[in-house]
Image (cartoon, rainbow, N blue to C red; front, side, top):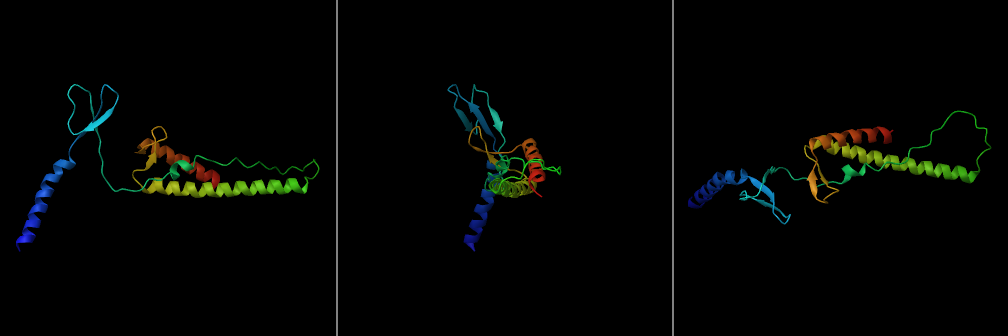
Length: 161
């Protein structure tokens, strides 16, 4: 009976003090050498900014959001006008069919990626990406997320049949 009471008391004590830890502010500042520092105490004599530290459910980062930027070349426009040119040779016809098949396969792949990206953007409140400038993971801002949603919808419209 004594051990469960000790465990209960230790848990209650830990919970009572954990709110201070979770509510702590984090400060960010750059020193005279250009090095960025983070700390719980604001520095004396240097300007600092408060960092918004959010915790939540961890989800693995995906690079698929950025993959929809690669789009296949637009397929050639066909017309119903009668051709006045002589018939193409069989080799040219085979090459054209092979090229068209490759374009269809690329469009199908782009469609699948765009649909996955749309699902990610629609279902997740926060989306992490690799920042191309710094190479570090960061969350998309609401404006960036909205832009990505619009780009993804356009990609779906262009690539999905």
